[in-house]
Image 1 (cartoon, rainbow, N blue to C red):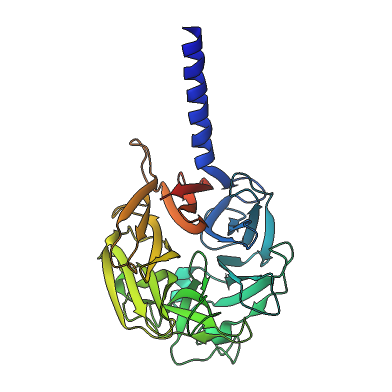
Image 2: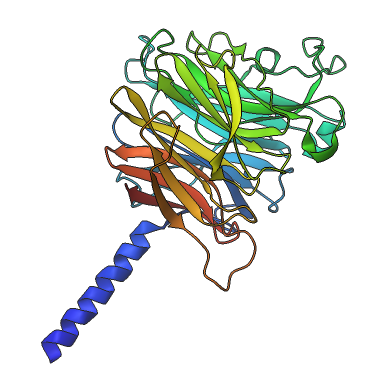
Amino acid sequence: MRKILTAITLIICCANMVGAQQKVPVFVSGTEGHKSYRIPAIVSLGNGDLLAFCEGRVNGSGDFGDINIVMKRSKDKGKTWTALSTIVDADDLQAGNPAPVVDRTDPAFPGGRVFLFYNTGNNHEGELRKGNGLREVWYKTSADGGLTWSEAVNITAETHRPNQPKINPAYQFKEDWRAYANTPGHAFQFFSGKYKGRMYVAANHSAGNPQPRSMDYKAHGFYTDDHGKTFHLSEVVNMPGGNESTAADLGHNKLMMNSRNQEGSVRARIVAISSNGGQSWDTAYFDRTLIDPVNEGSLLRIGTKKGKAVLAFCNAADVKRRDNLTLRISKDDGRTWTKNIVVDRSPESSKGDFTAYSDIVKISKHKIGVLYERDGYKQIVFSIIKW
């Protein structure tokens, strides 16, 4: 009898250990110099190291204020993480929306070079939509896997269209874009076809005066074909309300962009398809399988099957609140989603947002790492899902 009880105890202990490994805290609000951590992004290096980024909000959880971009590294597939390092500090202003990508095609950097795209801002989003303030677009690079970083490069004039001649004569455009944000989540690079080497960052903006139901928002993207020397804007996705966006390579020179619908009357993701590497759009539509509570999502190509892209998509699959974080798999370029795996969801007694923003990274052929906000934004955790 004692042996049986001992065996049961060991089983319970092992189960608890597995459960702990499944949700590894990476950024915990109230620790390491920041009251709150939001907006996760993650990439994998050539040696298998994982780099996790997010916004470190110094004084509180608000979207504007003293906000840094911070990073941690894992050398063991997400089981443990280093101490926090600050990559961008804009003094008491906002630095946010980290969008990392690894450039693996530049002959000048055979070991690969990490690009970190991000935004800075000097006012709240609501004021930006009224024309009061400016969001800028920047990037930094690291040639040693995130250990050291270059000076920041301002690419606002190439990737944004703000009508701000008083701030900078280069920022005077007919479009009058106001609010602006990268992704959130990772950017990506084409590895084959006509656009091999292109790094692409999904983004969104508001245009002109605020409109009811956030109809002044639309999605777009920007890209570089020469390893960050010059940048180009895509056409705007013609779906009013298009907001936080993510994108992936479909192969055959095609790209899929997947966006939050800020307008909100349809609680589903906006999808746009390009056949020229994200420069213009063939079609845009609602994917009503990908239900969404007006939140962020993450899209990633993880393989190819029978000439079609195998895609992974992760979001809070709920139409009312940020909860029920779900990983979906498509084996036909995102036309259908045949596997649906719940990553995490709230206990029955919970109310409000429980699982919110996320980003995903390929760990192996059938394993995906999910970095996501959990438990009312109290922490950002990492979990590996076998699909």
